[in-house]
Length: 219
Image 1 (cartoon, rainbow, N blue to C red):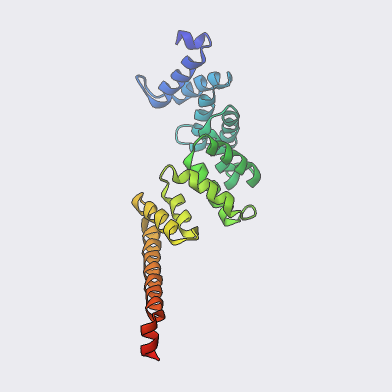
Image 2 (image 1 turned 180 degrees about the horizontal axis):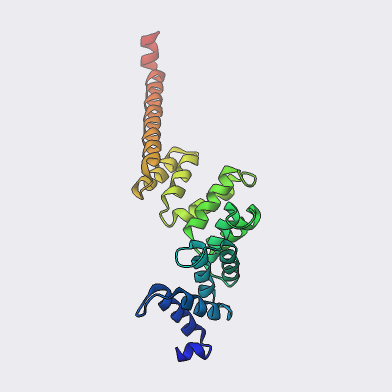
């Protein structure tokens, strides 16, 4: 406590966490906010993010989405990837702020470059769907591939659905099923396997019918 009172930002953050989580002390959200704010005023990104979460949830303090967004924005500007992701989400959905798809994409990209799989997957969908900006399948694939490196089943599913060749389609759909892609992935995989088997059978029949002896027989 002495160190926190003397302005040590790490100590202030830790005290905020203790009172927030009830670690070794009785939970006290007013004190948690007090210490988080002191750390946040020293530009501690984690304290700023924690304040944003408290005000967003409304579970332990009165919900205040505008305050939450304020703290998320400060934290995001200070490099907190969780805040960058959260800011992208609130700007995309219009939670407590006006929707702004360009800024949402900006923050998703910043979070994605820090390794956030959800941000990568979300960018994949945004560029694939064309709902918010012009469709760009190359850009969509780029972000889905990044998310797929983390075994994201949704990213793997869409990579499979959008694949141009059978081998790639099977690869990604099988990975999606393996990583918990659900019924849609299973159905798409089963369909792809049936279609590929059908094409293989048709090709074999065509090759058989092209043989000279078969053509002669069929005269």
